[in-house]
Image (cartoon, rainbow, N blue to C red; front, side):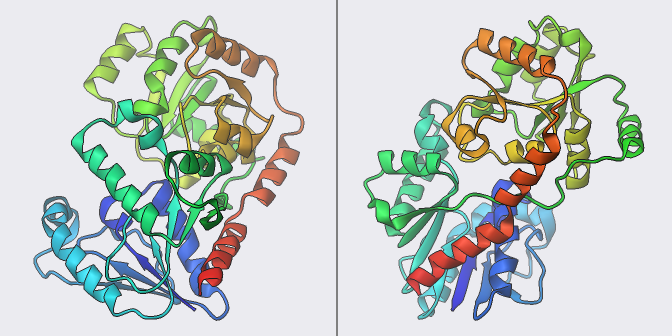
Length: 378
């Protein structure tokens, strides 16, 4: 069996959850028995796809004048219709195997079964945050891919439920395959290493941790406004790991709330550093209004940190009763959750939880289940 991936995600994102998903999946598919894998890239693209001997990567069309990130910025949109033509022509010549889109693509010329991973239904569930013309165009394109797919993989039961409630598709073509967890995430027992890390980052007080992007449905503005009213805020720093630089409005808000000396932001965070940010934190806060899965949730649990999370379906499905939950639209609920999290002390069962989380969510299991989906179509 041969599996074809189009590499459109690598033309749009250098890092992120979807890039990690395919970086973990494709080498495992390529290494499976009786399976070949080919990644068909558009030019220009970020060079962040996995480089393994068994995964064949090729550009469908090479442009000599395209070179590096500067060209990517200027030529990505210009070349998009040209690339679509060449991708369609290439896949039109494929007569055997399975096609797996990396980011909501389909081609009219396809003659092999199509697989699509739906990571969430955020645009459809929270349309007020995505009302611009580009978002509306994205939703139309996503629907076309959902309709064209022979098999759809959802990363949680919550996402599957939302998908089926919004789009008129048969439930028997939708499978649920949970995400995996990188083996990098674990409980660090070396206290000296943690002290060195905190000194290197100039973190000299206990802190609560927020990970990733802060825009719209991530609910950061609600969180920071409420956090400023918390009676214990003076005892903790708030550390933000990853995400874009502060916008002007964010900086102004943090200053107006009197938090300028209490918020530390680290923009470029390696996976190795992220593990230590989790391990050194007094608690991890995940206030999203909606998520399709919520990988930082299991990362934090694997690292043994206490978790305060929005009470939303995906989080309940993935983490059960392990976090402290709060209503992500209720200020009093969040304040009570912050109090509860710091009151419960260190988890005596953190190591047991970490082991269970790592056993349940691992990429080998994820890839194995996705290979079963491919084989059901072959």
